[in-house]
Structure formats: C-alpha cells, structure tokens
Amino acid sequence: MQDEHEIRHIVILAPENSTLLNIAGPLEVFDKAIEKFEAIREKMDFEYVTHVVSTGNRKMIATSGGLSILSEGSYKAIDYSIDTLIISALPKLEDYEMNRELIGWLKKQSVSVRRICSICSAAFFLAEAGLLDGKEVTTHWAKSEDLARMYPRVKVEIARIFSKDGNVYTAGGISSGMDLALALVEEDCGKSFALYVARWMVLFLKRPGNQAQFTTPLDCQSINNLSMRSVCEWLLDHFSEDLRIEALAEYAAMSPRNFARVFARELHITPAKYIDKLRVDYACQYLVETQLSLDEIASQCGLKNVDNMRRQFIKILDTTPAQYRKSFLSSFG
Image (tube, rainbow, N blue to C red; front, side):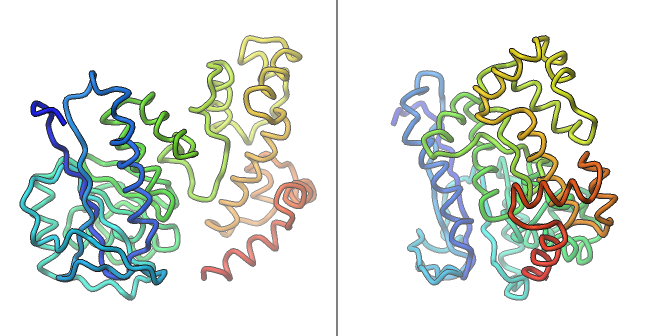
C-alpha cells in the first residue's frame, strides 16, 4: 500500500440478527475490488479498507439465518474517519429497536461521511434519525407502505432496486445490496472496473437503480454491441408498444434479417422471446404492486389480452397470472 494513497474506510454496520447477505454481499463486492485494484493501481489515488462492526457491545454478531460472524467490535470503538457507511437490515420490522444512542451516532456520522447507505429495512434507522426527510428513497417492497406511513416526510419509491438522493443511498434488500455496492465502486473507479469486478463475481453490472425489484430483463450494460445495447435500453421504456422486428431494425439502422441475427448472437435470445419475457417481467410487477385487473395489466404491458398473457406466463413462468398474484401475495402478506 503506497503512503500517498488515501484510505477510504468502508464500514458495514450490522445489528444483531441481521440478514447475512446484507452484510456479506456488499462486503464481497468491495473486497473483490480491493483484490482487483492491481489492474488500475496506476490510475487510483486511494485504497479501500473494509470493516464490519456491531451495533452492540460484543464482537460476535448472530445473523437471522443462525450463522454468527465475528466483527471488529462495537461501532462505539471506531477511531477512524468513515468514508462509506452501509447499514445492514433486520428481516422483521418488529425486531427494530431505535436505540437513541445509535440514532444519535448516525446523525453525527451523516455530517462527516462521504456516503451513508441502508440496505432493505435498515432505511428505518436512517428515517428515525431524520436523514431521509424530503429525500427519495427505497426499501424492500414489503416494507414500503410501513416506511411511508411511519415517516410521512420521506418520499418512498416503491420497489426500486436502489435509490440515490444526495449522499444518501438506499437499497431494496437482500441481493440489491450488491447492486448498490457495485454502483458505489463504479462511482469511485469507473464503469469498466466495476464491470470487471462484477464479471469476476459472476454478476451483471448493473441492474439500474430504478429497475423494479421483481423484474429480470437482461442487463443492457453488459452488451458489447452498442446498437443492441441502445435497442435494449429503448425497449425498457417502450415494451408496451406494438413492436415489430422491422421497427427495431430501423431503430438500430440495420436490415431486419441482420438485426435478428446480431440480436440473437449478443443476447442469446430472439428479439420476440426477449420482448415477451420483458413484458411478463413487468406484468409480474403490476400483479403484485397494483390492484389492476388482468385485462388492464395485459393492455399496459403490451400483452394485448388476458388469454395471450396467460399463455406467456405458462410458457415463461409455468404458472398463470392469477396463480402468480395469489401465491406471491399470500407468501408475503
């Protein structure tokens, strides 16, 4: 480590019974970035150092899955300047205890840290500290209504992967903590390096923050062909329209035959199947997030009618829209 390099301390704050992946996911992203820094060392003037600290007084932290992890100790013992503070979440909202000493510490840190982040329902800690007032934030989709109800000054964006407002970052939960960590690495080190890290971790770089938590469209940013990437990004905003291969080919300035060939080569799926999958992904979001009828959802997602939507659901998800809505809501409601 070179003396002239700035040290950026990345601190993951973990309450007792945290969700393990909320801790391990972001930690692995930053640790992989540290491991791969040799590839860009001549361009960088800083180093990451990662820390996991407890909100309690013991080093050992029990996670919700039963696996305990050994932290560096209590947050009260931190004697270095924090660059990025990431707060892990608890799986159950009723387990949150708003320790006034911890909330006061978060308020104090928010003034000095470069970035303060929450994963999943850890947004409730930041909200209790008043750090989310007037800001656009997200949390796990199942906790969104509670967050908005309990903290009316907070602008809750339902079901986003992650959100940034000033130096405050909030992630939807579980795996989205890794999406957020990759976005932070990209801010610091550039897109190409973050993609390099993501590939080593067998992850896509990166699901956009405003992508819904339920959808799984293929990642546009990992496509090398600029024309195909542009088409996929355009499709995210136009999936409900009447899309013919001729129109897509025209948008890409290619012949229909060549467009279909290049699209399949780059995305390993035909344009028609990709569009069907994209529409089903968004239909899933509407089924869970809204009370719209099946007819309304089919129309808004470009699936034309309920019969066609049902066929696509069975083909892609092996279930019907009605069964999906019923089973998904009953599983989490």
